[in-house]
Image (cartoon, rainbow, N blue to C red; front, side, top):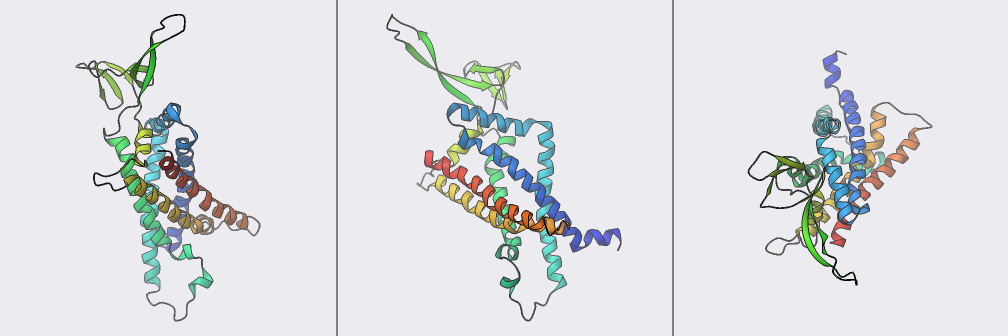
Length: 292
């Protein structure tokens, strides 16, 4: 078989499907560990931890390189899956006269193309809601917070007069948010009217995500956008779980990594992965909605 024939073969397509699929499973684990900070860290400290994580994920050179590899893998996985489906259809244009697919394959395996398409729709929606805004727009404000500062300790009863002041949370420490003296340019906090930079801040992705899944997120006509967004994410995670249910184990089979002793363990681990990872992802929007 020539090199070009191998590249075009269904075996090669299944091979690349398996490799990109397993890489995306690793990406899911990393992404989940970062997103779980939305529920494990609360209050102002939770905002800081998550926003620092989001900053690291969008600015670190090594993570950027992995991000581009992830984007490529998603697109390649989708295109390769479509090509494989078309190739299989052409290989058998006439269906079997007698066929009982339920006896020969699982339900997720028979609808992998549909499940994968739905997952791709979710990814596109998810990226437009958060990733695109985080990286390419000024829609997400810089992280700022209100702090009580002592103005006057008063008498011996330790009475205090307190004043609310707003600060930017930056990589150099807190900086007063004074709109008369400062302005922002991307992540930078600048002296107004000059090119002098005070410090670099953090985009407040935590607040944007929390607001998106909030009970208070409603349209002008009263449509509960927060509730709909939460349900959309939960259903999408269920779809992803079904996709992974068959895809994780079949990836090892496509790579020829079958062994009487280890294959059952891999299959069991894959099914556990298909349940636990999407479930934990789904818990996050539900939690944010309930506490809003």
